[in-house]
Length: 169
Image (cartoon, rainbow, N blue to C red; front, side, top):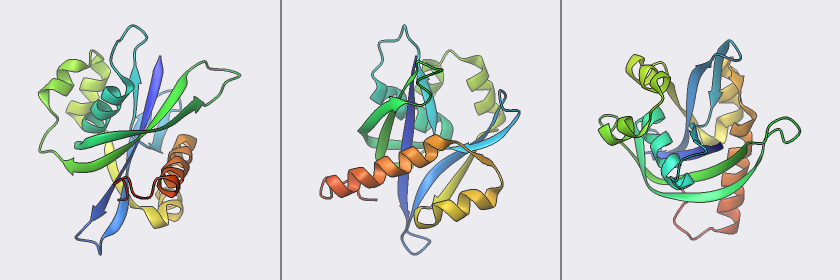
């Protein structure tokens, strides 16, 4: 199994052109509470889908946004002593809000729990000002996934090493 994490940012023209990052808040049964994280999805072991396709679908399903391009930021193991899962980070570029979750995205997932959550709308999307991400996340009072900080670091590192590639937003 491969996990993908999507760092999606947008410029909010209605809020003094602030750059905001999309975060998801959802109940994680294993923890018994809600957690604040970046959009996170999974590619099954038997799937031949590219991680980029999984990342794009994850963004659409969990946030209602779509991206014109996904930029690979890097990968790593979160808990290599305990779990053999590889986590791949992607930067969503040129995102835009969709009116609804595309039917193709619904058909592409076989996980009934995911479909049920979508139908019940229990994934809450937060748009946090990127320059105040720390105070914003702590102010929510929610548990914060450490991958959120890893994703933010990779986004900054990407922007510093690729300043002219069109991903600055």
